[in-house]
Length: 487
Ligand SMILES: Cc1cc2nc3c(=O)[nH]c(=O)nc-3n(C[C@H](O)[C@H](O)[C@H](O)COP(=O)(O)OP(=O)(O)OC[C@H]3O[C@@H](n4cnc5c(N)ncnc54)[C@H](O)[C@@H]3O)c2cc1C
Ligand code: SF4
Image (cartoon, rainbow, N blue to C red):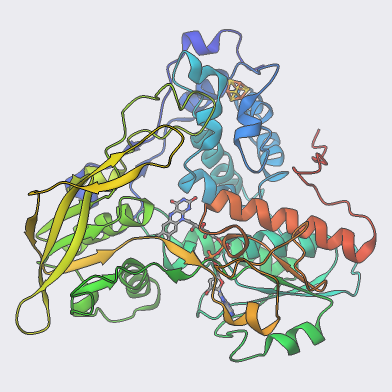
């Protein structure tokens, strides 16, 4: 344990932000690095609990008290070693994770929890700055060939683990750059793309091959990929976007959030030109959907120079505190206000869009909505009821649909005749599909989720693949309790 009674002495600290009026002028990350002495104190707040609930909160099983202690003792290199032993990419989770570990932290019962995510981010950033993060090449090659379809966090984590086990790994990506939703979904102000590039450089030096602009099923058939490799791992994500098929949905100016966010990422990262339909400049914008994607649309719209930004959510406004039905250490379903919400947007709760209205030239000019109530009878799921007389018209020029994703593309799953559920998510046992040569991980397997889960699934799938191919494995696994020895 770092500092006896450190949690009494030191208050929780989080990162500062560049002021709103300054940060919305560009797409750069806007967090302010705390001083090392302050970070160290944050590590000293950890109680090194006998039963560290933070562990079970983290899908990766990060060894949190151990790296907190190392940071408190200024042993940053040791902290990095501990962190990397369970997480291939702490620079992504340290920036973007909703931190279920912090929600589960025992200190959270009576005090603000340990700033675990903040500590994680600055351990890995220190590692890059000091040059401690270097390619690790496998000592021997097994001669086994593995093809990974999709280069999001699941595919990348699996590729690094499998390469370290000595297999020859090629990652196929249909987009022109590597990273999946890290690259094309999440905006630069949350994750500058140079952060992805420096990690890809290391993976490439470790021996992993990347083939971009290559869509499996179109440029190369899945059957050929299977024939040419010992194993195929499907990490194509949950890419099918949910639509809103109400009257007027075909009008111009109604755009899927991912098209909008992708174009902005391409404008910055690949010098693509701006497209009027996919730009919020001088427009009244309504974002439908109150999740992470909706929040990213708000931040992007404000940076593009939107006139106004409104955000609609069909669910009721959550409470600020945990309720009795939602106790610690479970994930808190409380009101979340992101940095993008703070930058200028009005949020409307319990609201249902009924119709998009036409300006007479095929463009959207307004939305018609009703307010809704969620009625819950005991033992039944809450039922949505429209409130009579609550109709309202909301003028707008651009509507962004951030309604989530329904599942993976069907083609590969169908071509391989994999057993799957009604959204085409393949059924798996230990990440292996009904075709023994084909494994699956990430959002494609579990449905729309989080980066930390994608990395976890990539690691666990790699563990199972190595074991399947070689009979045993030295890779780490949280599920099997085979956590690495780092001391
Ligand atoms: C806008 C947005 C913001 C988000 N913000 C956060 C956040 O702040 N924190 C968080 O934890 N999570 C966030 N998420 C969720 C997170 O990004 C995903 O859960 C995660 O990226 C899933 O990883 P994955 O590797 O399974 O799939 P993806 O990241 O979706 O990657 C799949 C890749 O496979 C490629 N592919 C698909 N089919 C083929 C094919 N046939 N051939 C070749 N390539 C193919 C795709 O092009 C894509 O690059 C966000 C999601 C979105 C959409
Ligand atoms: S639960 Fe919180 S206080 Fe306890 S070991 Fe984990 S981070 Fe430290």
